[in-house]
Amino acid sequence: MKVYVDLIIFINFAFDFLLLLSVSIILKRHATLKRITLGALLGGLTLTVLFIPFTTLTLFLMKVVLSILIVVVTFGVKDFKYVILNLFYFYITSIILGGFMYYLNVEFSYKNIGMIFYHKGVNINYLFILIISPVILYFYTKEMNKFKMRNSLSYKVDVYLKDKKVVRLNGFMDTGNTLVEPYNHKKVIVVNSKEIEKCLVPGNFMLVPYESVNSTGFLKCIKPDKLYIDGIGIRTDVVIGLTNAKLKKNGVNCILNYLLMEE
Image 1 (cartoon, helix red, strand yellow):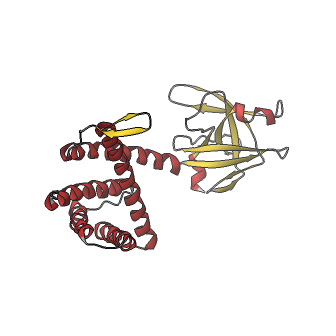
Image 2 (tube, rainbow, N blue to C red):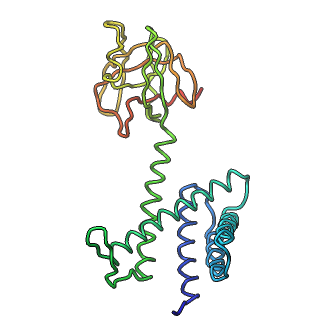
Image 3 (cartoon, rainbow, N blue to C red):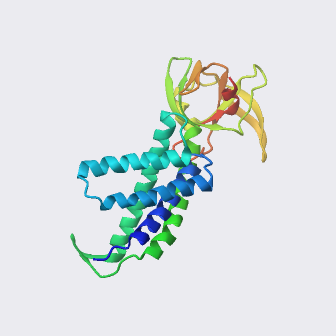
């Protein structure tokens, strides 16, 4: 069996370059192409240790050490948490890419009859792997950034009403919501009325004027006893605007006021 070490090193270099570039984009590390290339080159060269007859445990530890070295060379060292986070995303991205490659290889290279799989003589060539890998990592990076953005603006909200009832909501911090009621200058958050209607006292509400790009009008609001926003704290200078409109996706049923962040 012939093993083309130079080809293996090149492919590993290309993969490591894509992985490190993806980690840099996801975590916004802004690593230079020079450092990413250096880290990928180190990853390609260290592949040669696989040809040394280590024990399974020694080989595993060697891979961990080399991974840490690659991450440190690429992104530098600020503190322990910084290095661990970089290493974690390096591994996660590797697993995502490796999983897709394994799936494609099984899909194209094997046939099955029930639970029995057999090789059908077709292998994914290296050129195809190098072409499809950037596409996979592009969509993974894009979706990961969307997830991070949504997660950073999402909060658990506990609404404490006057009658000591508590309503638990999934809130989203909307930078476009800075509505303040004109009477006591309290911030207005918007909640889907279905989430809270069972706890409402008839007639115990106020009307707050609002103006948006497409319309103007009055928003029916109630005064809670207090609000607890996970990660922000307790807020009492808040009124709750009720709407029948469907709010944002992903289980959100409460639009928070961005002015709450100023405190």
